[in-house]
Image (cartoon, rainbow, N blue to C red; front, side, top):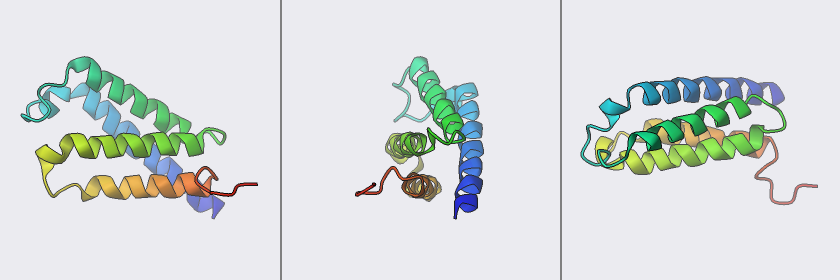
Length: 115
């Protein structure tokens, strides 16, 4: 189970790193949608930096659970931001959010009675 979690963490970190770098470099394309046009450039940069930091934290054993929760929250925020833009095609975001919740649970952050 531990090996599966590490493989999943590496893949999710790569997924989020590539998404963050794309978003930071091409935020003008994302901001063309009417629902996202009011968000300023610093918002996109901050969102991308947080995504990069959480993705890197996902690879560190002591920060993995907290980083997984942070990334899951960012993904859910992304779903809320892009709901107007992408409509029903949001399944691509729910799957990583569920996998990040699984990583957080596997690393002990979501266990209700942790000893």
